[in-house]
Length: 425
Ligand SMILES: *Cc1c(COP(=O)(O)O)cnc(C)c1O
Image (cartoon, rainbow, N blue to C red; front, side, top):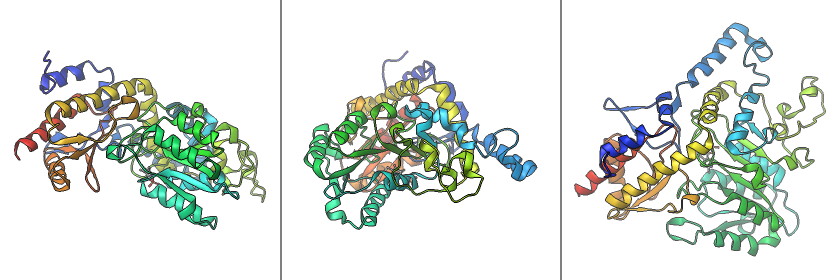
């Protein structure tokens, strides 16, 4: 076996020794000039599990043969359909089953959670988020502040990153929460920051927010299916996420939501819909609303069954692989990417993501030293070689090896294509 990490035999030997290598064949990988792409966009849209189609077809067939009866008869009934993914999702995010529900979309869930958990009172009226947050999160937060008749100028606190590349030290987060403790109603923080790939200590952030007398919610869009999460233990009040990124449940897939069990029977305000009404009374079609205890009580509508179906295939894979084993492979795979960049591309590329493996997931965010145009040129070159990362304005290339389907060979293809580009300049 070769010890040269730039050698194809080295990458192949790593792949041969990978206990999770069989999962790759369970995915449909787009082709580039007849060969499988090296697909590094699992943080944006995960690849299609082969098993997804059968679940979608099952719904179509059931609709064809049973029509309205499909809600209550046969296999995979639509009435309790969201319950089919509840336990596996709880495992994946480290929660208790009644703390999680698959519903709506991420941003819609963020709004629903803020309706219940952002209750500005007198002096305690501010929401604290990270500066440079994902636009949808910022729009949601800002609009909630305005909805309460308040000004974002004074009630939206955006913490600036204090380290190079847009990374936060825990000291900066701690200081921001403590300095604003008296006026904080809510802290919303990402599990993994989408642009830099930085992963955060959610337990520590939840503790700080609670010590400050605030509530805390996490946006786990880039963390679910990526990190080994322990949401219940973190003590977070709520969390939201989507399922089309590392969870591979397809474009616009039904999203996820966590509500800590301490709020299971809360009397806080909520925006209600009939699907959150207790099953015992839901179909009495009366005027009274009795929220289902737990996360289910925040559901609004009967779920889009076709949008939920692929998630069944996905959670089954995550269950089978196990988050601990996936995370172990992910560390090795992303570590290999880092090693290759350090050894062969350090003259041209900076890694913005923290080097500390406890502060990152699968993704490395890269910046070409020669500037934005050079960055675009590298990105285009990679694409011409069938290596697909993604570009985030103004100048970041994100490369995210997903441990369920990416392999060491993919990672080496990235490094070789990038080296070809630097050599040609
Ligand atoms: C992907 C992502 C979103 C997307 O929101 P949708 O409501 O699913 O369209 C929002 N926030 C963050 C942090 C994301 O990474």
